[in-house]
Length: 361
Image (cartoon, rainbow, N blue to C red):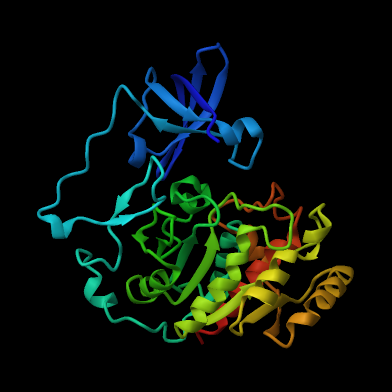
């Protein structure tokens, strides 16, 4: 449950789109690093009293090392401006029935300027959609797309398996201007557009953002228990089904690694095997990068044998992808490992992006 702490803002640190990092002095004389989302709680100032949810930080869970600001109780932010009439107000409630549930304007609500476009939208018209297990794959997929289609419009679908606020992601903040836009779907929020489901989010990517390619991945901080089914990335398989149901082209980015110390993630991660092999009922293209170390390539090929009847396995050349990855506008990191420490992981994601780009020619 919640581990509460109260303190005073001692210093403001880094800031990126939607988030402010701060140091909080606690009543017992210790300090705690915290993160505030100004759109939810207001903008903190030095000297403000703050209430914190410190549970994940105190337990050493994957929060990026932060307590989270729940409120600035002595200086609450004002209410948002009143709409011109009730029809103009957003009614999309996310992080529902939690104390910090935001009420947002859904991209396809009656008050949305995009309502007319999406009211009868029902088809992605062959849109290539790359599905990935981890948020860290996003910039690598983008690098692969840009390597072959530098002018392609790429939309990102933020699903709700990891961080719900898009603002938590420094990767997204660094990719502003490199993406056509972000659509936060399900319980996730804070994107350029808000959608209630992945299906409506995909349609918004195609018909509102006019994307040439879309990428679906959860936010940072995925959930996992180490069991076959107990991980939030299982939703990758559901994403394949959603893309296919809407007439898109699902392209699976495989989670491949020879650096992860956990046996279940070496070669092809069990996350990919379960999501694509058991959850995805629709057929997808699964991209296998050429140029892997021979021993790793053998492991990958063996792991994918059971998936060959369910999906189309496509080998993609990787020439030029290393340079594209090194030119990424944001740092590449997965589970604390950078490009050189887990090269195969990022190469596999970039190869999926390249395959998506080649569908545009």
